[in-house]
Image 1 (cartoon, helix red, strand yellow):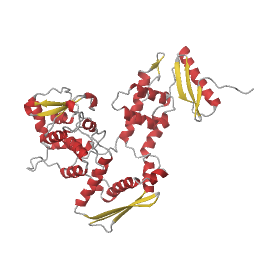
Image 2 (tube, rainbow, N blue to C red):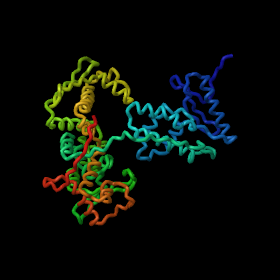
Image 3 (cartoon, rainbow, N blue to C red):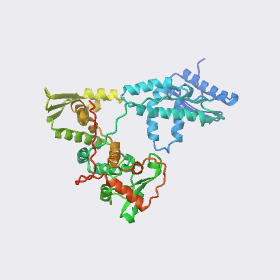
Length: 454
């Protein structure tokens, strides 16, 4: 006689059966991973038996990595870096999410590592994901318990990759700084100028608030005290203002009630590394190329040949070249690049989008600079954090002591106090003023040794 009813606790979502059942005080919510009712009932029976054995015979509970990862995210929503951890875990799930915790180790992580390397992802970024795995396994072996037993008997050692492909810091020269600032929108130029004169990190600038400003009447100036929750080393940080940074702050007064820096829409800026920043640095690099005495002529054309066919043609002439450099970059080239980076292929709708011209143009320019002018490639990809490196290098060039540099850059130095006397603040401000550009050429010249990347 045929069956008339399914087992209690099974529910079908789309084509896949899911478990939602309370059994002996334990709530089970998970996918069975199958569209077959018979197979789903076997999965449910296995989970119920595991709970029974755990409850009556003390057998260690078996959890998948996905369950442990969910628990980790739920417990750490307060973390400043939780969004990055969630992104790493989302990338890991197809490779180890279904595995029991005891089966997560170097061997089972190897396919994930190779996949990310094939996508061109830097080893440091891969290590960030591996460190989240290591943290979850350690918690499962040492803190998390069910019925008095940890979820994992022993956490395996997770081997980190040797970081030998990290991108080198790129401190800007004064000419490069002028070019970059001149091509940035006004609101980003103000933030970049403040950053390169204070050594602050990106989010410290984006979230800088007027409530954090502390007047120093003795010196006719002010400083900012950034709360420890926003600082990378989790120590309250003092930001002193040299004359350039002070002028930037004064120019921002009255624009917003709470935040120092706002966008053209008068709203706080979430990130400096946005599309305007990425586009502006490319235009700044093109301007530097045109100022190069070896440069003769460059021209480009962006054409839509059909609804789904767009191409960018760049032609460049330079001295000592046997023939002009010509680059043809099509929408198919861009699609191949996206797939290599792990992004989804362009849909027909995206190929027909008029805005595809702009994305194609900037991708083509990046390839053009890398192939024809490799000495400017690093400048065309300058990072927001390189502004902090620039400030640090200029302080060192100005012979500012290491101890003072650590305070100005917000590095951990063992002295967590932010209580400074007026004399100490005056010393810090004087040191920060040494890196202000001066027409009198009293500022030490910073000679940058840059290796060609091509």
